[in-house]
Amino acid sequence: MNGLDIRELECFLVLTEELHFGRTGERLYVSQSRVSQLLRSLEGRIGARLVERTSRRVRLTPLGEEFLAGLRPAYDGLHAVVDATRSAARAVEGSLRLGFQGTANDQMMRAVTRFQKQHPGCVAEMIEVPLSDPFGALRRGEADLAVVLAPVMESDLVVGAVFSRQPQTLAVSVRHPLAARARVGAEELAGCALIGVRGPAPAYWRDAMAPSVTPGGRPIPAGPLAGTLQEGLTLAAADRGAMLLCRPTAEYHGRSALAYVPVTGLPDSELALVWRRDHETARVRAFAEALARTEARTREHGGDGAVGTSAG
Figure 1 (cartoon, rainbow, N blue to C red):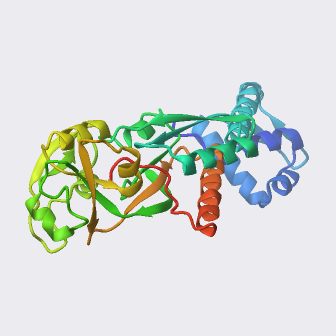
Figure 2 (cartoon, rainbow, N blue to C red; figure 1 turned 30 degrees about the vertical axis):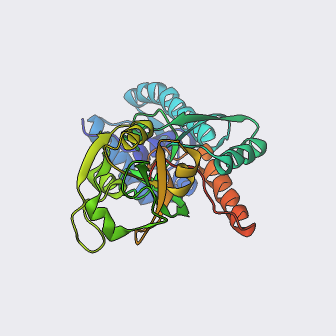
């Protein structure tokens, strides 16, 4: 039998209550002829008459009675499932798993505090997202949202707020020739091996973390690969290469074996709040709003909007 049409089933159920084609059409906001058409189509799928119609009355056939007895509880159960799922989607209760890369600093924690004050029935759980796999926790269902470094060009993910623009900083060993510089131009990276990201992160994202060419088109040597921020900083401290970071991360992860040199001429790093397109719930929308309000308040008070990151 071909796939069922919910409109045919609804028409049949209403007709069994009204036993009148005209009143059935009125309840369904369709014409009487449309009711007849839907019934004929359903009977065609089943292969037998369900309703007997004369000039004076409408009644169910024995098969129609049997069909109704099985259909009504199944239809009511389907509605109950839909209603329960709708209620769950609208409720801001339970837990919200928030992924972050690197450092969840004061700005993010203020957004979490705002969210929990507004929605005391929902607890925000913090989950660190590996540098090497920015989107995996979302796709595996381990996180409901994630704050990751932009760019994000994944068709199955929704990009919410893009925020926290920060200058780029180069982490190098204190023994590195650039360590004593006040700043470094982007074109000078052509003489500096950059520590890259290994793992399942998409190529465009990995290239944003460790570009292969300067803005002027000069090739940048590829350094070793790191799977985590700490691995990258350790490689830089060992003078195996240099690592690009956003300014707040460089300040947070200060190490005596590393020097942090501002880089001019590169695009600023940015953070993005992202979630799965097929997993947008009331909890997700509520946190996105809380973060947006916190970010707006930070800008009003002259803050830098830093939310925390891993590399930039």
